[in-house]
Image 1 (cartoon, rainbow, N blue to C red):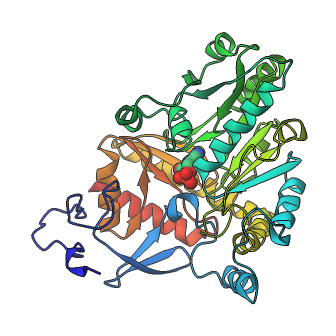
Image 2: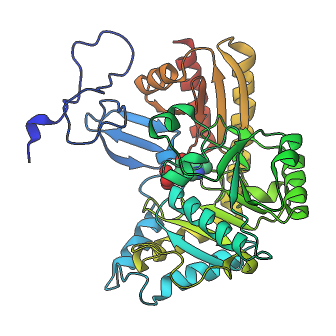
Length: 411
Ligand SMILES: Cc1ncc(COP(=O)(O)O)c(C=O)c1O
């Protein structure tokens, strides 16, 4: 192990207030991320600590993954139980109880009749696209195959999902992208013009667009989208990878518009930080999938599924969802006050514990200033700062966040 090539943790030559980043440091990790120099070593509640002992209030939560925060004793017990003399992995060649119990629990908690497990968000969306195309082949012998995604949407970085992701800078270096997947405007007229009953298999939508700037789609738009997809026999796929599992204050984001999708994808917080994703589908769609049509070595393994059963129960708890709503209102009120008082804040958008703050400076600069002050936030586009705290965040944590965020805005 060549430790001499690791980047050093501090940058003594830096005199600016910006947190040092080392994009060009020699490293054995492929350089697709620009990481700050701090190295995180432990966490407690909503707090993280770096190797120098500095503490940070975490409003990123591993990008909406660490919903239960850090050091949660019940989650740790669930990990221990899942390990205790049990199986870690069996592949999908054999039955194991935890995956079947988890699928039952997800079906009981949603519109769905069947579930396919995988290992990440992008993989869940790839699975959803395949299900939609497989279903599309069965409709009257016509191969409905096109997948439509919305302007501002983000669905992952694999080939199919990249073609559905509206980020020119992510797409350009990898053209040609996967075919049969197009982006349409977030507009009912464009939808009406684009949905072809003969060729369109599905529309994929995030009820709250996360990476695209935290845009809460209007429930009336969602209902109109459901109506038109139904009229034209097109599937509606909801990508709830970031906005589902309690983040908006309802367990599923689709509950806010009272619509029922045909397929839903989920991932991030599902398994307490272990990689897991899932595709939930109605019987009509799922029954199109035949043995051999899709697969994964790791998806739904007994260890990860056991932990996910615990997480599902915790994140569906009415008290947890009530906390998300109450803290969301506190955050919304506090951010609105800051917007009124600081010209550097242009707009504030969000729901529950998923917020976007448009700032006049580059979002990256705000992320850096906040980190210097001991606050972790992330970006969602050039000028949007995104807030995704753990769902267990307290009133005191939100109050502390508002103080630190205001300090960061002042610079
Ligand atoms: C809405 C949405 N879909 C898909 C993905 C891709 O998930 P993953 O990074 O686990 O592949 C993300 C990740 O941020 C996401 O926010």
